[in-house]
Structure formats: structure tokens, C-alpha cells
Amino acid sequence: MDLYEYQGKELFRRFGIPVSDGGLAETPDEARVVSEGIGGEVVVKAQVLTGGRGKAGGVKLANGPDEAEARAKGILGLDIRGHVVRRLWIERASDVAKEYYLSVTFDRGEKNALLMLTTEGGVDIEEVAAKRPEELARLHVHPFEGFQPHHARRLVYAAGIEDPEEQRQIAEIIGRLYEAFVESDAMLCEINPLVVTPERVVRALDSKFTVDDNALFRHEDIEEMRDLDAYPAEERAARAKGVTYVKLDGEVGILGNGAGLVMSTLDVIALAGGRPANFCDLGGGGHAQGVVDALEVITADPQVRAIFFNIFGGITRGDEVARGILQAVEQMEIKHPIVVRLDGTNAEEGRRLLAEADVADLHVEATMLDAARRAVQLAEQAVA
Ligand code: GDP
Ligand code: MN
Image (spheres, rainbow, N blue to C red):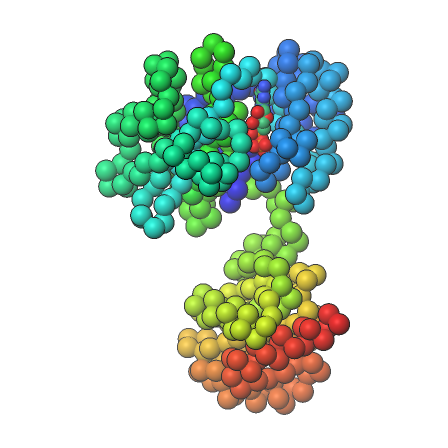
């Protein structure tokens, strides 16, 4: 789960990472009030779950409440890379002398946490990593050892930060960011820019904070930060129904049982020359209501042109899945062709039920590859 900048900063604050005072606004009027409360120069910042807001015109300085109101008018409703701005974070403007970059994330290859620090902050970090990798100081922290003060000192030196005042503050912030990362079960905690003011005060001007969805059950306060309106309708529906759903950008909606089978289904669709629109994982279940729920989620995606059901019955029984499919097509109007491949436990019984029901545009195929080809072909016909 990605947090908005202001939410990430709220967590930064709790872990003792210095941030600027500010407040939220959803209207130009509220922006004026928040700005009045802060006093002096403020920054008006679009709150959207994507980066590059500055370049897109979503971050503006404002000198006083009048200007804050005007800036808010200009930014609210902006479309930033497909995200419409509905909220603003308004904070006290900082004087910026230098812009650094600091992050903690996972290095999956090394099976360790990875700290990264560079004095070339403010800009796209991928660009720094690609063009001037020597500028990016990197340091792994082994989870058994945990963070130690020497990690921060080494990183600060490696990044070439020479001012003792900066060194001290940044080393402190590194420790706190690592703590925030571990304590929040985060997957990424990033500060870009981490600024140094002309008075040599170091502060986080931005935050990018991603928390592992699988750990949210033990972070109720973070789960509550979720902004349901920011998700597409089908993702909201999936969450509400407890269906595992992932949006992709092709045309074939995929429903399978078990992560392994679903992953290979994606491959087989690609092999057949198609592209998956999304996938739902029924898990070990596959009882009728689960199938209905998943079909509702899949068909809410406007990109879907055909649906591919790929079920291998182990614990899941083929006849039960077949009943689920039949129940779903009875309950809801599905306007896409459905291709079914059923194998494993009670598959024959399931296929018999489907054949007997004789549903229009429901195709049963014998193998996974045949079914994938059929689904891709039907999706192409639907597009044409
Ligand atoms: P992003 O573009 O989505 O990464 O948004 P940021 O929060 O990083 O803001 C973009 C840029 O705006 C920063 O890199 C800064 O250069 C600038 N900026 C943000 N806040 C302030 C501020 O308080 N004072 C000044 N002078 N610049 C700021
Ligand atoms: Mn930024």
C-alpha cells in the first residue's frame, strides 16, 4: 500500500524525522485557512499516488493566503499521470540550499535491506543510478545484525557529505528512517529531496512510503490511511470481497486457482499471442460464491474482452467450480465470452455440468493451451 506524501510525513514525524508543519486542504478556501494558520511563505502540494508532481505543476510556492488560494485553484483537479488531484498538502516553505536523496528498501537479490544516499537529490533517482552510479552510496543492513550507528556513518562518508553538522543530522535521520522502515513493515521509505537549509538544518521535504499489504493486519492505523477513492472500481470491489486481484493492461481476464497456476496462465496467454487484462486468484477455494465474486471483479474491468477460467482441482472440486460459473452467469449478465479449462478433482463431472447447461458463449476446452488460444482468439474478435 502506497501512502500519500502527507501520510508518509506523519509517520516520519512519529519516528522523529524532521518535517515541516502543514495541513490538508480539499478546496481553495481550505488552502487559504491552512496557509493563514502557518503564516508566511508556504508550498502547495498535490497529493497523488505518483511521483514527478513538481515537473507536472503539482508543487507551487505561495506567498501568503491569497496566493495559496490561487495556487490551490490551479492544482486541484489537475491530472498528474492519470491521477486527479483531490487533496492538497500545504506546508511551511523551506529555504533550500542543497537537495539530497535518502532511502531504505529491500535488495531482494542480496536478501538484505538496502540504504541509499546521494547528494544528487531532488531529481529522478533512476537517472542518477543509471548515469552516475558512483554518486549513489549504497549499504546493506543484515536483518539479524540490525541497524548500527556505524552503518549511518559509513553511508554518510561514502556519499561524500563533509560538513560535520550535516553528517550528524543525516546519520540520525538514517537511523530513524531505518526504524520507520522496520517498525512499519515498509517496503520502501524514500526522502527525495532531503534538504539542507542555508542555516544547515536537514529536513524531509517529500516522502514516498510503501507498506507491505500482507503486514497491514498489524498496523490498523496505517490501514485506516487507505484512500479507497484512489483505486479503480474493480480493485475496490475485489478488496471488499476479499478476492486476490491484480490489474494488467491486456484484453483477457484470467481466473485461476493458486498463484502458480495463475502465473503460468499469464505465460500461456502470452504464448498464444494475447495479453492478460487482469487476474483473480481463487486460492484453494473455488466454491460457488467465490467464483461469482471473482467474475464480478473481472468483468468490472472495462478492458476485458474475453474471460479465461483455468482451474486445476486439487482440494478445489471441478463440479463446484462449474456450479459457481453457472450460478454466476445466471445471476449476472456477462457480456464476454468465457473459456473454461477444468482439470483435476471432479473435472469430468464439472465439464458435464457445463455441457448440459448449454450456456451461450461458454466454451470448454480440453487443455490449457487450447483454452488460451481460444480465449485470445475470442478477445481479438471482440476487439475487431
Ligand atoms: P515530486 O516532484 O513529486 O517528487 O515532489 P517534491 O515534494 O519532491 O517537490 C518537488 C520539488 O519542489 C522539490 O524537489 C523541491 O525542489 C521543490 N520544493 C518542495 N518543497 C519546497 C520548499 O519548501 N521550498 C522550496 N524552495 N522548494 C520546494
Ligand atoms: Mn520528490
